[in-house]
Length: 154
Picture 1 (cartoon, rainbow, N blue to C red):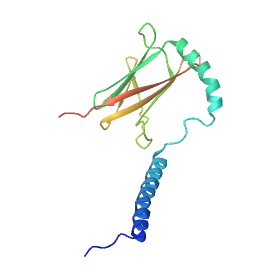
Picture 2 (picture 1 turned 90 degrees about the vertical axis):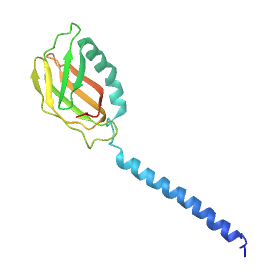
Picture 3 (picture 1 turned 120 degrees about the vertical axis):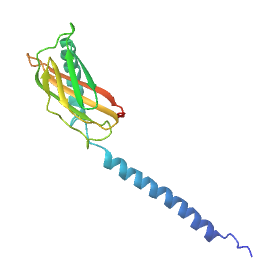
Picture 4 (picture 1 turned 60 degrees about the vertical axis):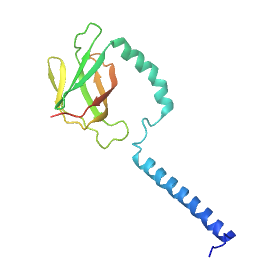
């Protein structure tokens, strides 16, 4: 015996389909908001006005930061245009994932031969390194380094 497809059945099927779509959208929106680390700046207008001035001052330093990671230690080296290590004040580096702040760490670095080194174990994947330092004349230096920590083979 076959059952007849009535308007009531079609209504139930339609409501169930839209209910699933709405439920999935709500779950995805909740997960997206929950994983968002927050604002980059409090006032984007003020930040945009200061950006070019800060960028010009930093470019005039001529410094470049490089990072290396061997699975046990992170090394960050800052060099000037001539390849020499400049004198730095207030060096810090925060290492974290690009998608969330849960794994962010700010290691205590030791300077060895002009290179800043710290013991660190990173899980495989993409990591951002936010380097900050100050030149002797007070010019801030900031650079983000994108780094891939590969899986170690024993």
